[in-house]
Length: 577
Ligand SMILES: Nc1ncnc2c1ncn2[C@@H]1O[C@H](COP(=O)(O)OP(=O)(O)OP(=O)(O)O)[C@@H](O)[C@H]1O
Image 1 (cartoon, rainbow, N blue to C red):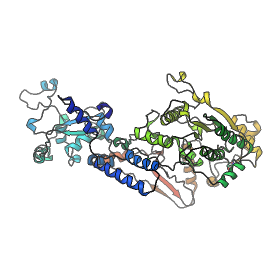
Image 2 (image 1 turned 180 degrees about the vertical axis):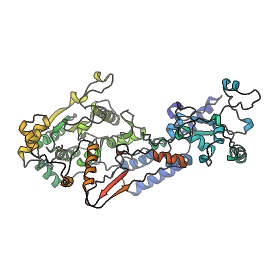
Image 3 (image 1 turned 135 degrees about the vertical axis):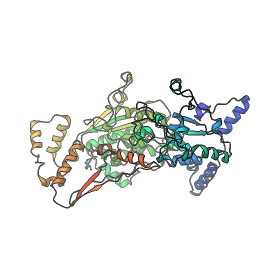
Image 4 (image 1 turned 45 degrees about the vertical axis):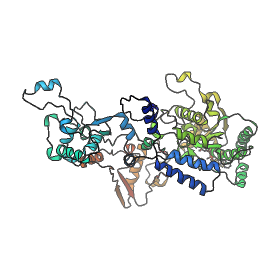
């Protein structure tokens, strides 16, 4: 039971099994007055908002599942974003802060003892309390608990300073604040500091020596999981809504023949069949895939909601895409947010927490179709993730959880980032033994008529040939006839396409150097948050790299000039990282 509860385990002999059981049960179900108040408020709100019974229950259960009562200490950890979970499990430190005469300390090693003179009484090994006594002046204001939590000493260059934040247990503090304060005063006041030079390590960096703060740590830590609050509360407003009937009719009427054929094929399938469909809708750039997705989504909403007993509020079709831009283009959500896939944890699969699973199951219980656009950016690992999440949410082991999947995109593109092609097997030892669900299930529908350049048939055909690698010499000559000299200073207003950021930088520098208008440089101001000593603070600032590829595209110096355009990207939704 304790293992399931994943609590800190405090081992003691308990002679009466009944008291053991009653202790654990009362610990698990200990009263949470704050939660009762919250539940009371939630039920009041549900009643006042005139919801039907199902929505009242959903509202109350969502409040219950997404709130948790925490102690003041936990709240402080949460607000300060301190990594509680990782730290408390990786390290648990016992601090003996009883009176000095009662403290147990370890002896120095035999080798060290033998080196000492026989009259020396300095036989105790070093420990955190001693280190605290001789801490550097930058840390004078720290109390022992904070010092022990935040700092560790590395005695040799090889030994890495451990990143840790500890849960400290203070022994001997039995509620008598005066005794506790006396001990602290006599032992830990700054005037008692003795620097023991021979115990100090030499040549270590500051962070090796004292600190756990590593500004270069790339991994993100989701502190919400520590206290059981998931990052996203699942709302009801996720997808593109039903469009007015007139607009829908207009949209369908304007589809070209190819588009209409696939559109009616899908609608017909869901009208007459009850089994899932797995399609890959492909076609080169500008053939109208996104337009067709929008029409299919609207058509499916209408058909699926016509089924007897169907509730129009239930989510039946999901529209998603691997990136925010692609998702926005079709009015859907990213795959990550749709299936609650954490952005920062690579591809190691983690099942949903119970409360998330519960909410997702309630929300997607009548899910019939998932449409994924820009499937070329979805690699094999990500695809497996989606399959796993669908099975988990739908609560079965059927392929794709028994839900239909329409993948849309163009596979004549670059390989997915950090992943293999969707049609390849997973690159693990046993990957070849697993069935390839993409190859085994998906049938291809291809759109061929380019709609984006429909006024220029010749160019559209050239693009199609280029896409498949069947371009002719005359195609290349046609493209080359459009080549213009980049050296010309007047080019800056034209859109340029480059394949790497380095080329973009070089070009921007060139354009900037050519401008004769008034210019200036804006220097970025970095700041370090958190209560750190001045030295660590400066150290952290010095470590910020002057390389935009390592700072998520943020430049140290931004050059501006009158008349030159600057593109500013602004992340309007940071849910997905
Ligand atoms: N049936 C149609 N009638 C008129 N215009 C259309 C039609 N279908 C698509 N278009 C237009 O063609 C252009 C490209 O369409 P869309 O963006 O849907 O193509 P796509 O295949 O998704 O392109 P990409 O692969 O580049 O994302 C858009 O301007 C769209 O309005």
